[in-house]
Image (cartoon, rainbow, N blue to C red):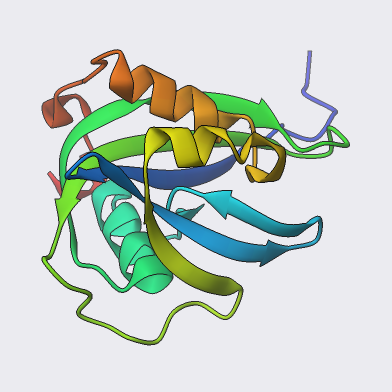
Length: 155
């Protein structure tokens, strides 16, 4: 039987968990729902690897050079109105000592280093419930080896 309905395609995004001295790199940003906080994150673009995508997004949103060290997990969530499903690949890594770029994406207000308590006390302005879920998984010690990420386009 031929396939007649459109093929469902989730929107692929990448995000980064970066901890330094008990604080986490977060971004405060303008969204259609007002000001929100999020881990540095964004859409995975064509012709780049997932690692390239998360490295680019961290730079564009925080100004820091990012080096991934592990994959935290793969998270699936829907937009509030269920019109879009997001497939978020969250990476763990380190960043340069200081920002290497001053100009941030237009919707970013600031990159901030926040404690777990500061992040969790602002749950009402998390970009998505996945922000708290990723932080919790990180704090629980969840880590996946980066070798699990295989881009067959570059082999």
